[in-house]
Length: 406
Image (cartoon, rainbow, N blue to C red):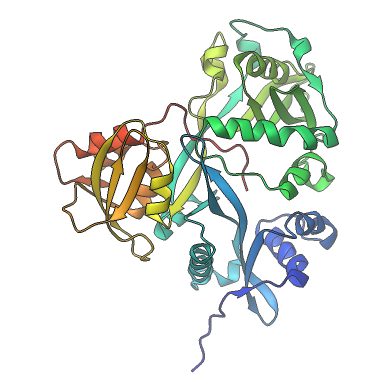
């Protein structure tokens, strides 16, 4: 008897256009070939794709961007950035996602990628595959009319920049930011071009084309403006795509700019770091409409490599008993942190803590607290003081942050 569920197959480069159209269809976007072509060009290299087909039709899809991830201390590791995950409605509950995720994670291990990462449209799904919320974010619905800036700076610092110039200059600014924080997923060249140069009407959601501004060499912001007259007064909205600055003056200048766009009354921003400077820049933080944003999820595949590569806040030794149902990182691991370096090795020694791979994947970058998950019963302390000890080891000066959903 044949299996009624087809299996995932790697997508050939010649078939990426059909794959990209299927991705758009499953995300309820424009699935015409001419709209999908820029994405095919963007991922002509450094991209792995899988599809599940029924009579030739793609009913399931999953992709991996081959990029890297910044760690606390400034080092980087290869990461399998999982993206474009979709299953046709009539094929749900048939095991397609699990099958695609299994082959993608197996191949990540084969490619020497010790970590996988993703953003989740439906967060409840990915814990079952070992992904944990490693880099929480905040979002804002700002009402500038109700707040000012504590120490305004000269807005002449900010200038408009053309897309090609931004494409030449901004990746270096992004890389400089990633030296200061863990959790930053590298933006591949094709995505920089999509995000700066390409801007099709179907991508704009009824708003303007992207506006690009910068404080040269110090920071940048991208945004759109969406009209919405509230008779007799204007009621437009700034939709901030991203804002990044390397110093306090540039940060304040860019925020003043986006909060002062003519004919608008609100600024909507997402994917902001939990330690964002903005609440400390304004006179009335209550006007920021702060709420949770989508976190970056990570999935540890090679514990010795991932935990041994990052910088730690203090020294110490802990043995972690890790439960990984998929077997990539199951077992006991001794994490040894000294003044100059860290190591993580398998061990038979008695464990200090017991936790699942989802929990370890949540806390390893310092964005989710060990003590919080322990208080929720998700981490078990086997030796008194071990929870606090691991929490202190993993602590970071700046919260992990990635600027772009992929």
